[in-house]
Length: 171
Length: 398
Image 1: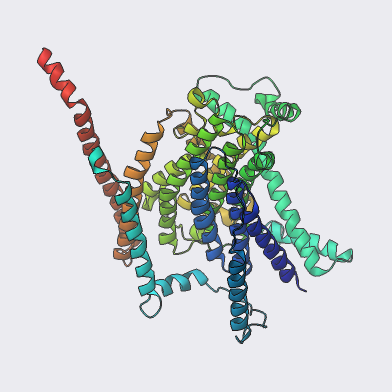
Image 2 (image 1 turned 180 degrees about the vertical axis):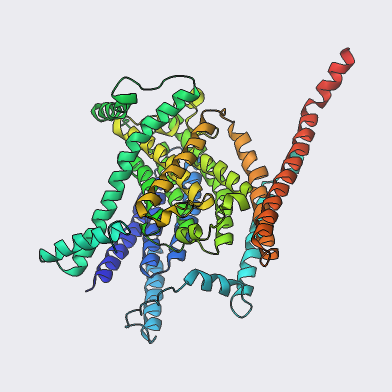
Protein backbone atom coordinates (compact mmCIF):
# COMPACT_ATOMS: atom_id res chain seq x y z
CA UNK A 1 0.00 0.00 0.00
CA UNK A 2 1.39 3.37 -0.96
CA UNK A 3 1.38 6.49 1.17
CA UNK A 4 -1.28 8.12 -0.99
CA UNK A 5 -3.59 5.15 -0.48
CA UNK A 6 -3.16 5.25 3.30
CA UNK A 7 -3.93 8.97 3.33
CA UNK A 8 -6.95 8.42 1.10
CA UNK A 9 -8.32 5.66 3.35
CA UNK A 10 -7.87 7.83 6.44
CA UNK A 11 -9.60 10.79 4.81
CA UNK A 12 -12.41 8.60 3.48
CA UNK A 13 -12.96 7.02 6.89
CA UNK A 14 -13.04 10.47 8.50
CA UNK A 15 -15.52 11.74 5.89
CA UNK A 16 -17.82 8.75 6.30
CA UNK A 17 -17.67 8.93 10.09
CA UNK A 18 -18.57 12.63 9.99
CA UNK A 19 -21.40 11.91 7.57
CA UNK A 20 -22.81 9.28 9.93
CA UNK A 21 -22.51 11.73 12.82
CA UNK A 22 -24.49 14.35 10.84
CA UNK A 23 -27.55 12.12 10.81
CA UNK A 24 -27.17 10.50 14.21
CA UNK A 25 -26.34 13.40 16.52
CA UNK A 26 -29.35 14.94 18.27
CA UNK A 27 -27.97 18.44 18.54
CA UNK A 28 -28.72 20.41 15.38
CA UNK A 29 -25.71 22.72 15.62
CA UNK A 30 -23.46 19.70 16.15
CA UNK A 31 -25.01 18.13 13.07
CA UNK A 32 -24.16 21.27 11.08
CA UNK A 33 -20.58 21.24 12.39
CA UNK A 34 -20.20 17.55 11.51
CA UNK A 35 -21.51 18.45 8.05
CA UNK A 36 -18.70 20.99 7.82
CA UNK A 37 -16.13 18.32 8.61
CA UNK A 38 -17.72 15.99 6.03
CA UNK A 39 -17.47 18.68 3.37
CA UNK A 40 -13.90 19.37 4.43
CA UNK A 41 -13.07 15.68 4.01
CA UNK A 42 -14.47 15.80 0.48
CA UNK A 43 -12.30 18.86 -0.20
CA UNK A 44 -9.24 16.90 0.95
CA UNK A 45 -10.18 14.08 -1.44
CA UNK A 46 -10.30 16.62 -4.29
CA UNK A 47 -6.89 17.93 -3.24
CA UNK A 48 -5.51 14.36 -3.26
CA UNK A 49 -6.80 14.06 -6.84
CA UNK A 50 -4.72 17.13 -7.85
CA UNK A 51 -7.92 19.12 -8.35
CA UNK A 52 -6.75 22.15 -6.36
CA UNK A 53 -9.30 24.54 -7.80
CA UNK A 54 -12.26 22.28 -7.05
CA UNK A 55 -10.91 21.61 -3.54
CA UNK A 56 -10.59 25.31 -2.69
CA UNK A 57 -13.97 26.12 -4.25
CA UNK A 58 -15.49 23.30 -2.20
CA UNK A 59 -14.24 25.00 0.97
CA UNK A 60 -15.25 28.50 -0.15
CA UNK A 61 -18.74 27.60 -1.35
CA UNK A 62 -19.81 24.71 0.85
CA UNK A 63 -18.13 25.60 4.15
CA UNK A 64 -17.83 29.37 3.73
CA UNK A 65 -21.32 29.97 2.42
CA UNK A 66 -23.72 27.06 2.63
CA UNK A 67 -22.70 25.51 5.95
CA UNK A 68 -22.45 28.94 7.61
CA UNK A 69 -25.96 29.70 6.33
CA UNK A 70 -27.18 26.38 7.76
CA UNK A 71 -25.72 27.19 11.16
CA UNK A 72 -27.21 30.67 11.02
CA UNK A 73 -30.65 29.35 10.15
CA UNK A 74 -30.50 26.65 12.83
CA UNK A 75 -29.49 29.17 15.48
CA UNK A 76 -32.29 31.54 14.53
CA UNK A 77 -35.07 28.96 14.52
CA UNK A 78 -35.24 27.26 17.88
CA UNK A 79 -34.16 27.99 21.42
CA UNK A 80 -33.58 24.42 22.46
CA UNK A 81 -31.70 22.82 19.63
CA UNK A 82 -32.08 19.26 20.87
CA UNK A 83 -34.31 16.97 18.84
CA UNK A 84 -36.10 14.35 20.91
CA UNK A 85 -38.21 12.57 18.29
CA UNK A 86 -37.35 9.17 16.80
CA UNK A 87 -34.47 9.37 14.37
CA UNK A 88 -35.69 6.82 11.83
CA UNK A 89 -39.15 6.19 10.47
CA UNK A 90 -40.68 2.96 9.16
CA UNK A 91 -39.37 3.47 5.63
CA UNK A 92 -35.72 3.09 6.67
CA UNK A 93 -35.34 -0.21 4.79
CA UNK A 94 -36.47 1.44 1.49
CA UNK A 95 -33.86 4.20 1.93
CA UNK A 96 -31.17 1.66 2.71
CA UNK A 97 -32.17 -0.39 -0.34
CA UNK A 98 -31.98 2.62 -2.68
CA UNK A 99 -28.59 3.58 -1.25
CA UNK A 100 -27.24 0.04 -1.68
CA UNK A 101 -28.60 -0.19 -5.23
CA UNK A 102 -27.06 3.16 -6.15
CA UNK A 103 -23.70 2.07 -4.76
CA UNK A 104 -23.90 -1.28 -6.56
CA UNK A 105 -24.90 0.39 -9.82
CA UNK A 106 -22.06 2.92 -9.62
CA UNK A 107 -19.55 0.19 -8.72
CA UNK A 108 -20.80 -1.94 -11.64
CA UNK A 109 -20.55 0.95 -14.10
CA UNK A 110 -17.07 1.92 -12.92
CA UNK A 111 -15.77 -1.67 -13.02
CA UNK A 112 -16.49 -1.70 -16.76
CA UNK A 113 -14.34 1.43 -17.24
CA UNK A 114 -10.83 0.81 -18.54
CA UNK A 115 -9.17 3.17 -16.05
CA UNK A 116 -10.74 1.53 -12.98
CA UNK A 117 -7.74 -0.49 -11.82
CA UNK A 118 -4.97 1.76 -13.15
CA UNK A 119 -3.02 4.25 -11.07
CA UNK A 120 -3.34 7.83 -12.26
CA UNK A 121 -0.62 9.07 -14.58
CA UNK A 122 1.60 11.88 -13.30
CA UNK A 123 0.52 15.30 -14.51
CA UNK A 124 3.09 16.82 -16.90
CA UNK A 125 5.08 19.71 -15.42
CA UNK A 126 3.44 23.08 -16.00
CA UNK A 127 0.03 21.52 -16.58
CA UNK A 128 -2.41 24.35 -15.96
CA UNK A 129 -5.74 22.80 -15.02
CA UNK A 130 -7.39 26.16 -14.15
CA UNK A 131 -6.83 27.65 -17.62
CA UNK A 132 -8.19 24.49 -19.22
CA UNK A 133 -11.21 24.54 -16.91
CA UNK A 134 -11.86 28.23 -17.52
CA UNK A 135 -11.52 27.91 -21.28
CA UNK A 136 -13.79 24.88 -21.48
CA UNK A 137 -16.44 26.68 -19.41
CA UNK A 138 -16.70 29.51 -21.96
CA UNK A 139 -15.82 27.65 -25.15
CA UNK A 140 -18.70 26.99 -27.59
CA UNK A 141 -17.28 23.54 -28.34
CA UNK A 142 -17.38 22.61 -24.67
CA UNK A 143 -19.66 23.68 -21.85
CA UNK A 144 -20.69 27.27 -22.52
CA UNK A 145 -24.40 26.40 -22.86
CA UNK A 146 -24.79 24.42 -19.59
CA UNK A 147 -22.68 27.07 -17.85
CA UNK A 148 -24.90 29.91 -19.05
CA UNK A 149 -28.09 27.94 -18.31
CA UNK A 150 -26.86 27.35 -14.74
CA UNK A 151 -26.12 31.06 -14.29
CA UNK A 152 -29.59 31.99 -15.60
CA UNK A 153 -31.07 29.51 -13.12
CA UNK A 154 -29.12 31.15 -10.27
CA UNK A 155 -30.25 34.59 -11.43
CA UNK A 156 -33.87 33.39 -11.47
CA UNK A 157 -33.44 32.08 -7.92
CA UNK A 158 -32.00 35.46 -6.86
CA UNK A 159 -34.88 37.39 -8.42
CA UNK A 160 -37.35 34.97 -6.80
CA UNK A 161 -35.74 35.45 -3.38
CA UNK A 162 -35.91 39.23 -3.72
CA UNK A 163 -39.55 38.99 -4.84
CA UNK A 164 -40.49 36.83 -1.86
CA UNK A 165 -38.69 39.10 0.63
CA UNK A 166 -39.79 42.40 -0.92
CA UNK A 167 -42.87 43.87 0.68
CA UNK A 168 -44.14 46.85 -1.36
CA UNK A 169 -46.97 47.69 1.05
CA UNK A 170 -44.40 48.48 3.76
CA UNK A 171 -42.96 51.43 1.85
CA UNK B 1 23.53 26.61 -5.34
CA UNK B 2 24.70 28.08 -2.08
CA UNK B 3 23.13 28.85 1.26
CA UNK B 4 23.09 32.55 0.38
CA UNK B 5 21.00 31.99 -2.77
CA UNK B 6 18.61 29.25 -1.73
CA UNK B 7 18.87 28.68 2.02
CA UNK B 8 15.74 26.58 2.33
CA UNK B 9 16.70 24.02 -0.31
CA UNK B 10 20.28 23.74 1.01
CA UNK B 11 19.13 23.29 4.60
CA UNK B 12 16.47 20.77 3.58
CA UNK B 13 18.95 18.73 1.52
CA UNK B 14 21.45 18.78 4.37
CA UNK B 15 18.87 17.63 6.94
CA UNK B 16 17.50 14.96 4.62
CA UNK B 17 21.06 13.69 4.08
CA UNK B 18 21.50 13.38 7.85
CA UNK B 19 18.19 11.54 8.29
CA UNK B 20 18.94 9.15 5.43
CA UNK B 21 22.39 8.61 6.99
CA UNK B 22 20.58 7.50 10.18
CA UNK B 23 18.93 4.72 8.19
CA UNK B 24 15.63 6.39 7.40
CA UNK B 25 14.14 5.77 3.96
CA UNK B 26 14.03 8.60 1.40
CA UNK B 27 10.28 9.35 1.56
CA UNK B 28 10.14 9.25 5.36
CA UNK B 29 13.06 11.63 5.60
CA UNK B 30 11.43 13.99 3.11
CA UNK B 31 8.13 14.02 5.03
CA UNK B 32 10.01 14.67 8.29
CA UNK B 33 11.99 17.55 6.76
CA UNK B 34 8.82 19.16 5.40
CA UNK B 35 7.16 18.72 8.79
CA UNK B 36 10.13 20.38 10.52
CA UNK B 37 9.96 23.23 7.99
CA UNK B 38 6.29 23.85 8.77
CA UNK B 39 7.06 23.70 12.49
CA UNK B 40 9.86 26.23 12.06
CA UNK B 41 7.63 28.62 10.08
CA UNK B 42 4.84 28.42 12.66
CA UNK B 43 7.28 28.93 15.53
CA UNK B 44 8.79 31.99 13.88
CA UNK B 45 5.30 33.38 13.24
CA UNK B 46 4.30 32.87 16.87
CA UNK B 47 7.48 34.60 18.05
CA UNK B 48 6.71 37.45 15.65
CA UNK B 49 3.20 37.48 17.08
CA UNK B 50 4.61 38.18 20.56
CA UNK B 51 6.32 41.27 19.22
CA UNK B 52 3.20 42.29 17.30
CA UNK B 53 1.51 42.73 20.68
CA UNK B 54 4.28 45.15 21.62
CA UNK B 55 4.09 46.95 18.25
CA UNK B 56 0.30 47.27 18.46
CA UNK B 57 0.45 48.69 21.99
CA UNK B 58 3.28 51.09 21.14
CA UNK B 59 1.57 52.36 17.98
CA UNK B 60 -1.83 52.83 19.61
CA UNK B 61 -0.11 54.73 22.39
CA UNK B 62 1.49 57.09 19.87
CA UNK B 63 -1.84 57.62 18.11
CA UNK B 64 -3.42 58.48 21.45
CA UNK B 65 -0.54 60.72 22.53
CA UNK B 66 0.70 58.33 25.22
CA UNK B 67 4.00 56.49 25.74
CA UNK B 68 2.77 52.89 25.80
CA UNK B 69 4.64 50.09 27.59
CA UNK B 70 8.02 51.50 28.66
CA UNK B 71 8.90 49.94 32.05
CA UNK B 72 10.10 46.43 31.32
CA UNK B 73 13.30 46.25 29.30
CA UNK B 74 14.41 48.67 26.59
CA UNK B 75 11.34 50.42 25.08
CA UNK B 76 9.13 48.05 27.08
CA UNK B 77 10.16 45.13 24.86
CA UNK B 78 9.78 42.59 27.67
CA UNK B 79 6.21 43.68 28.38
CA UNK B 80 4.60 41.15 25.95
CA UNK B 81 6.38 38.28 27.73
CA UNK B 82 4.94 39.47 31.03
CA UNK B 83 1.53 39.60 29.34
CA UNK B 84 1.92 36.01 28.15
CA UNK B 85 2.94 34.77 31.59
CA UNK B 86 -0.12 36.52 33.00
CA UNK B 87 -2.37 34.91 30.39
CA UNK B 88 -0.95 31.45 31.04
CA UNK B 89 -1.27 31.52 34.83
CA UNK B 90 -4.80 32.97 34.72
CA UNK B 91 -7.59 30.62 35.73
CA UNK B 92 -8.94 28.77 32.72
CA UNK B 93 -12.71 28.93 33.04
CA UNK B 94 -15.44 27.26 31.05
CA UNK B 95 -19.04 28.44 31.47
CA UNK B 96 -21.31 25.89 33.15
CA UNK B 97 -23.66 25.13 30.28
CA UNK B 98 -21.12 25.68 27.52
CA UNK B 99 -20.69 23.11 24.81
CA UNK B 100 -17.22 22.02 25.96
CA UNK B 101 -15.77 20.52 22.78
CA UNK B 102 -16.97 23.29 20.45
CA UNK B 103 -16.01 25.93 23.04
CA UNK B 104 -12.44 24.67 23.22
CA UNK B 105 -12.13 24.03 19.50
CA UNK B 106 -13.07 27.61 18.50
CA UNK B 107 -9.86 29.43 19.58
CA UNK B 108 -7.73 26.70 17.98
CA UNK B 109 -9.60 27.02 14.68
CA UNK B 110 -9.33 30.81 14.89
CA UNK B 111 -5.54 30.64 15.21
CA UNK B 112 -5.33 27.90 12.59
CA UNK B 113 -7.25 29.91 10.01
CA UNK B 114 -4.54 32.57 10.25
CA UNK B 115 -1.52 30.26 10.31
CA UNK B 116 -2.81 28.28 7.33
CA UNK B 117 -2.69 31.47 5.24
CA UNK B 118 1.10 31.40 5.44
CA UNK B 119 1.13 28.21 3.38
CA UNK B 120 0.70 30.33 0.26
CA UNK B 121 2.70 33.44 1.24
CA UNK B 122 5.78 33.70 -0.97
CA UNK B 123 8.48 34.99 1.38
CA UNK B 124 11.06 35.10 -1.39
CA UNK B 125 11.24 33.84 -5.00
CA UNK B 126 12.48 30.47 -3.81
CA UNK B 127 10.87 30.37 -0.38
CA UNK B 128 7.21 29.54 -0.16
CA UNK B 129 5.17 26.86 1.53
CA UNK B 130 3.32 25.56 -1.48
CA UNK B 131 3.17 26.87 -5.02
CA UNK B 132 -0.59 26.59 -5.20
CA UNK B 133 -2.12 27.57 -8.56
CA UNK B 134 -5.21 28.88 -6.75
CA UNK B 135 -3.37 30.85 -4.05
CA UNK B 136 -5.76 33.79 -4.32
CA UNK B 137 -8.84 31.67 -3.67
CA UNK B 138 -7.04 29.96 -0.78
CA UNK B 139 -7.21 33.31 1.04
CA UNK B 140 -11.02 33.22 0.96
CA UNK B 141 -11.15 29.53 1.91
CA UNK B 142 -9.04 30.18 5.02
CA UNK B 143 -11.32 33.11 5.84
CA UNK B 144 -14.27 30.70 5.78
CA UNK B 145 -12.65 28.67 8.55
CA UNK B 146 -12.12 31.89 10.55
CA UNK B 147 -15.82 32.72 10.19
CA UNK B 148 -16.70 29.25 11.38
CA UNK B 149 -14.48 29.59 14.47
CA UNK B 150 -16.21 32.81 15.49
CA UNK B 151 -19.72 31.44 15.10
CA UNK B 152 -18.60 28.37 17.10
CA UNK B 153 -17.23 30.56 19.87
CA UNK B 154 -20.38 32.67 19.96
CA UNK B 155 -22.72 29.72 20.10
CA UNK B 156 -20.77 27.41 22.43
CA UNK B 157 -20.27 30.08 25.11
CA UNK B 158 -23.97 29.91 25.97
CA UNK B 159 -24.09 33.64 26.50
CA UNK B 160 -26.44 36.03 24.74
CA UNK B 161 -23.81 38.72 24.26
CA UNK B 162 -21.40 36.20 22.78
CA UNK B 163 -24.17 34.97 20.52
CA UNK B 164 -25.06 38.45 19.24
CA UNK B 165 -21.38 39.24 18.77
CA UNK B 166 -20.92 36.03 16.80
CA UNK B 167 -23.94 36.83 14.60
CA UNK B 168 -22.66 40.31 13.88
CA UNK B 169 -19.15 39.16 13.09
CA UNK B 170 -20.40 36.49 10.72
CA UNK B 171 -22.72 39.00 9.02
CA UNK B 172 -19.72 41.29 8.49
CA UNK B 173 -17.42 38.54 7.26
CA UNK B 174 -19.92 36.89 4.91
CA UNK B 175 -20.93 40.18 3.31
CA UNK B 176 -17.44 41.67 2.94
CA UNK B 177 -16.19 38.45 1.40
CA UNK B 178 -17.99 39.49 -1.81
CA UNK B 179 -16.04 42.72 -2.52
CA UNK B 180 -12.84 41.07 -1.30
CA UNK B 181 -13.19 38.13 -3.69
CA UNK B 182 -14.02 40.54 -6.51
CA UNK B 183 -10.93 42.63 -5.77
CA UNK B 184 -8.76 39.52 -5.67
CA UNK B 185 -9.80 38.95 -9.29
CA UNK B 186 -8.17 42.24 -10.36
CA UNK B 187 -4.55 41.13 -9.78
CA UNK B 188 -5.65 37.82 -11.32
CA UNK B 189 -6.73 39.65 -14.49
CA UNK B 190 -3.44 41.57 -14.68
CA UNK B 191 -1.18 38.60 -13.94
CA UNK B 192 -3.40 36.06 -15.74
CA UNK B 193 -2.76 33.69 -12.86
CA UNK B 194 -4.06 32.99 -9.37
CA UNK B 195 -0.63 31.93 -8.22
CA UNK B 196 0.85 34.31 -5.63
CA UNK B 197 4.36 34.02 -7.04
CA UNK B 198 3.15 34.64 -10.60
CA UNK B 199 1.25 37.73 -9.41
CA UNK B 200 4.44 39.11 -7.83
CA UNK B 201 6.49 38.22 -10.93
CA UNK B 202 4.07 40.10 -13.17
CA UNK B 203 4.31 43.30 -11.10
CA UNK B 204 6.91 45.20 -13.06
CA UNK B 205 4.62 48.09 -12.20
CA UNK B 206 2.98 47.81 -8.79
CA UNK B 207 -0.68 47.07 -9.24
CA UNK B 208 -1.54 49.92 -6.90
CA UNK B 209 -0.69 52.28 -9.80
CA UNK B 210 -2.87 50.35 -12.24
CA UNK B 211 -5.70 49.78 -9.81
CA UNK B 212 -5.61 52.24 -6.89
CA UNK B 213 -9.33 51.84 -6.29
CA UNK B 214 -8.93 48.05 -6.21
CA UNK B 215 -6.20 48.36 -3.57
CA UNK B 216 -8.40 50.65 -1.49
CA UNK B 217 -11.46 48.38 -1.67
CA UNK B 218 -9.30 45.36 -0.82
CA UNK B 219 -8.00 47.21 2.25
CA UNK B 220 -11.54 48.09 3.39
CA UNK B 221 -12.75 44.53 2.89
CA UNK B 222 -9.66 43.20 4.69
CA UNK B 223 -10.29 45.46 7.70
CA UNK B 224 -13.90 44.25 7.80
CA UNK B 225 -12.75 40.64 7.52
CA UNK B 226 -10.40 41.26 10.47
CA UNK B 227 -13.25 42.70 12.53
CA UNK B 228 -11.23 45.81 13.37
CA UNK B 229 -12.53 49.34 13.80
CA UNK B 230 -14.56 50.81 12.16
CA UNK B 231 -16.07 47.35 11.64
CA UNK B 232 -15.50 45.97 15.16
CA UNK B 233 -19.16 45.82 16.10
CA UNK B 234 -18.77 42.16 17.04
CA UNK B 235 -16.97 43.29 20.18
CA UNK B 236 -18.72 46.60 20.75
CA UNK B 237 -17.80 47.06 24.42
CA UNK B 238 -20.55 49.53 25.16
CA UNK B 239 -23.38 47.24 24.07
CA UNK B 240 -21.98 43.68 24.03
CA UNK B 241 -19.36 43.81 26.82
CA UNK B 242 -16.81 41.99 24.68
CA UNK B 243 -18.71 40.17 21.95
CA UNK B 244 -18.04 36.62 20.84
CA UNK B 245 -14.99 36.15 23.10
CA UNK B 246 -16.69 37.33 26.30
CA UNK B 247 -16.53 33.97 28.12
CA UNK B 248 -12.96 33.15 27.20
CA UNK B 249 -10.20 33.69 29.71
CA UNK B 250 -6.48 33.13 29.94
CA UNK B 251 -4.69 31.72 26.94
CA UNK B 252 -7.92 30.85 25.12
CA UNK B 253 -8.69 34.55 24.92
CA UNK B 254 -5.01 35.02 24.12
CA UNK B 255 -5.43 32.78 21.08
CA UNK B 256 -8.21 35.00 19.71
CA UNK B 257 -6.20 38.14 20.47
CA UNK B 258 -2.94 36.84 19.03
CA UNK B 259 -4.83 35.43 16.05
CA UNK B 260 -6.35 38.83 15.36
CA UNK B 261 -2.97 40.59 15.49
CA UNK B 262 -1.28 38.02 13.27
CA UNK B 263 -4.28 38.16 10.93
CA UNK B 264 -3.89 41.93 10.62
CA UNK B 265 -0.18 41.55 9.88
CA UNK B 266 -0.94 38.76 7.38
CA UNK B 267 -3.47 40.91 5.55
CA UNK B 268 -0.89 43.70 5.49
CA UNK B 269 1.35 41.14 3.80
CA UNK B 270 -1.30 40.11 1.29
CA UNK B 271 -2.00 43.75 0.52
CA UNK B 272 1.71 44.16 -0.19
CA UNK B 273 1.84 40.98 -2.28
CA UNK B 274 -1.22 41.73 -4.38
CA UNK B 275 -0.81 45.47 -4.93
CA UNK B 276 2.69 46.56 -3.84
CA UNK B 277 4.95 44.06 -5.56
CA UNK B 278 5.44 41.66 -2.63
CA UNK B 279 9.14 40.95 -2.11
CA UNK B 280 10.18 42.99 -5.19
CA UNK B 281 12.04 46.24 -4.66
CA UNK B 282 14.26 47.52 -7.49
CA UNK B 283 15.83 44.10 -8.06
CA UNK B 284 17.05 43.77 -4.46
CA UNK B 285 15.16 40.49 -4.17
CA UNK B 286 17.51 38.94 -6.73
CA UNK B 287 20.53 39.53 -4.47
CA UNK B 288 19.48 37.14 -1.75
CA UNK B 289 16.29 35.54 -0.40
CA UNK B 290 17.15 37.05 2.99
CA UNK B 291 16.79 40.55 1.53
CA UNK B 292 13.54 39.51 -0.18
CA UNK B 293 12.09 38.36 3.16
CA UNK B 294 13.20 41.60 4.78
CA UNK B 295 11.49 43.64 2.02
CA UNK B 296 8.28 41.64 2.33
CA UNK B 297 8.24 42.03 6.12
CA UNK B 298 8.83 45.78 5.87
CA UNK B 299 6.01 46.12 3.33
CA UNK B 300 3.70 43.93 5.43
CA UNK B 301 4.51 46.07 8.49
CA UNK B 302 3.62 49.20 6.53
CA UNK B 303 0.31 47.61 5.54
CA UNK B 304 -0.25 46.60 9.16
CA UNK B 305 0.52 50.15 10.22
CA UNK B 306 -2.12 51.50 7.82
CA UNK B 307 -4.65 49.03 9.27
CA UNK B 308 -3.77 50.22 12.80
CA UNK B 309 -3.95 53.84 11.67
CA UNK B 310 -7.51 53.27 10.43
CA UNK B 311 -8.42 51.34 13.57
CA UNK B 312 -7.35 54.04 16.00
CA UNK B 313 -8.70 56.94 13.95
CA UNK B 314 -12.19 55.81 12.96
CA UNK B 315 -15.30 55.40 15.06
CA UNK B 316 -17.30 52.21 15.14
CA UNK B 317 -20.25 52.25 12.74
CA UNK B 318 -23.66 50.72 13.28
CA UNK B 319 -24.47 47.26 11.93
CA UNK B 320 -27.21 48.46 9.53
CA UNK B 321 -24.95 51.26 8.24
CA UNK B 322 -22.14 48.76 7.79
CA UNK B 323 -24.33 46.29 5.89
CA UNK B 324 -25.88 48.94 3.64
CA UNK B 325 -22.41 50.41 3.01
CA UNK B 326 -21.30 47.00 1.84
CA UNK B 327 -24.31 45.84 -0.15
CA UNK B 328 -25.42 49.16 -1.62
CA UNK B 329 -22.06 50.80 -2.25
CA UNK B 330 -18.97 48.62 -2.01
CA UNK B 331 -20.29 45.50 -3.74
CA UNK B 332 -21.77 47.28 -6.80
CA UNK B 333 -18.66 49.45 -6.99
CA UNK B 334 -16.34 46.45 -6.93
CA UNK B 335 -18.39 44.68 -9.63
CA UNK B 336 -18.30 47.83 -11.77
CA UNK B 337 -14.56 48.18 -11.20
CA UNK B 338 -14.01 44.56 -12.18
CA UNK B 339 -15.96 45.07 -15.42
CA UNK B 340 -14.12 48.33 -16.22
CA UNK B 341 -10.75 46.73 -15.45
CA UNK B 342 -11.42 43.68 -17.61
CA UNK B 343 -12.68 45.88 -20.47
CA UNK B 344 -9.75 48.33 -20.28
CA UNK B 345 -7.31 45.44 -20.02
CA UNK B 346 -8.66 44.05 -23.30
CA UNK B 347 -8.78 47.47 -25.01
CA UNK B 348 -5.26 48.50 -23.97
CA UNK B 349 -3.70 45.07 -24.52
CA UNK B 350 -1.50 46.28 -27.39
CA UNK B 351 -0.90 49.81 -26.07
CA UNK B 352 2.56 50.92 -24.90
CA UNK B 353 3.22 50.51 -21.18
CA UNK B 354 2.94 54.20 -20.22
CA UNK B 355 -0.43 54.48 -21.99
CA UNK B 356 -1.64 51.27 -20.36
CA UNK B 357 -0.76 52.51 -16.88
CA UNK B 358 -2.22 55.96 -17.51
CA UNK B 359 -5.42 54.54 -19.00
CA UNK B 360 -5.91 52.08 -16.13
CA UNK B 361 -5.21 54.75 -13.52
CA UNK B 362 -7.66 57.18 -15.09
CA UNK B 363 -10.31 54.47 -15.49
CA UNK B 364 -10.01 53.77 -11.76
CA UNK B 365 -10.23 57.43 -10.82
CA UNK B 366 -13.27 57.97 -13.06
CA UNK B 367 -15.03 54.85 -11.72
CA UNK B 368 -14.42 55.96 -8.14
CA UNK B 369 -15.55 59.52 -8.88
CA UNK B 370 -18.81 58.36 -10.55
CA UNK B 371 -19.51 56.00 -7.63
CA UNK B 372 -18.97 58.82 -5.12
CA UNK B 373 -21.25 61.17 -7.10
CA UNK B 374 -24.01 58.54 -7.20
CA UNK B 375 -23.60 57.87 -3.47
CA UNK B 376 -23.67 61.62 -2.75
CA UNK B 377 -26.91 62.23 -4.66
CA UNK B 378 -28.50 59.13 -3.09
CA UNK B 379 -27.62 60.25 0.44
CA UNK B 380 -28.82 63.78 -0.33
CA UNK B 381 -32.20 62.42 -1.44
CA UNK B 382 -32.34 60.22 1.65
CA UNK B 383 -31.57 63.17 3.89
CA UNK B 384 -34.20 65.32 2.21
CA UNK B 385 -36.72 62.54 2.63
CA UNK B 386 -36.02 62.36 6.35
CA UNK B 387 -35.27 65.98 7.17
CA UNK B 388 -37.51 67.64 4.57
CA UNK B 389 -40.66 68.24 6.67
CA UNK B 390 -38.63 69.35 9.69
CA UNK B 391 -36.83 71.93 7.59
CA UNK B 392 -40.12 73.40 6.42
CA UNK B 393 -41.34 73.60 9.99
CA UNK B 394 -38.12 75.37 10.97
CA UNK B 395 -38.50 77.87 8.12
CA UNK B 396 -42.17 78.48 8.94
CA UNK B 397 -41.37 79.37 12.54
CA UNK B 398 -39.08 82.19 11.41
